[in-house]
Length: 455
Image 1 (cartoon, helix red, strand yellow):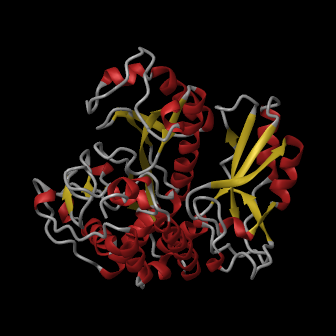
Image 2 (cartoon, helix red, strand yellow):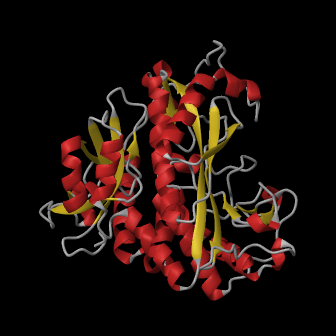
């Protein structure tokens, strides 16, 4: 068991005497943060001994209901697991009125081994595998999101909010600077919060729908830290939105007639000296390692969709001509394909994986991407010729477009259990299968409107 250094906690509290409480949390398989609030005098013992959390916390579906099929509830007596702070993640929670800090936890078994149900540990398992093969994954995660009018969201009828000017965006208007100006008070607070939290927040974009935004996060040489950044960033955006009277949603498809929100994973492989192994002065297609990484991403895409699209709503995003994928393919500087070799100088060359929805768990999505890269590199999987022009016209639509099929493909995978851990995949699929059954057992209002009188 790798323990955090209590000196980190002591130094943080000494530097910030205003802090009254600390939110400590881990991220469950569905991507929800669950944990406790500590008073500042409790933080030292939390770093020294960890905080106990019941093992069932990693068995919950997205509604917080136990999934007994995981074997983490009654069979375990709902016993505690020691959860330790992740070094470097103790930071501020600047959207809260009370002076609050936060820290990410990761779970261990009582014998000190990683808890297999913890998605951060699953990602660590994949990263360790790559490092054992001589590769260090460098990663960044982009997340699109929508701002929604708070009152409309409470009423279950989401609509874009009015900005500081009083105007409510209604048109697509991709990259419209005026939208960024209209929401400047909120965005300024997000950037200030990111600075206080140590998040590498970079370029700000108004995306391809009213109220849809994206702030790019910078690359990390530590892939685990890149996923930590995404988790902390989502908390920051949601918290600041509430503070400004909005709701920020990362659901994959909040509006039927507008683009969904994606999670774009940017990744490259470096050697032990930090040299980008995807770089080179020749064409990107001449780099065998990059090609094999892309080939692995394509080969595992179908069986990994359940990890990239973990909710019922996720599958509404997969439509032609919407910047969401319909089948495996790759290309150079081409956003109509799901695996994109980015533009820019050869030294910064990397792959952009454009499959996951913004609702995916960052740890799980990144783990699946890196597992595919490792598989492709190890087996030297060739991706075929890169696609130029309209990928939607050239890629067969063979990705699963419903939750049941995606879960079946993941359940049949030989690679995912081997790369992410067999027990993790067993637990993840048990949770999502139970959640899928519960979802489709409900009778929605749409059924009544369509069939009540006419069926």
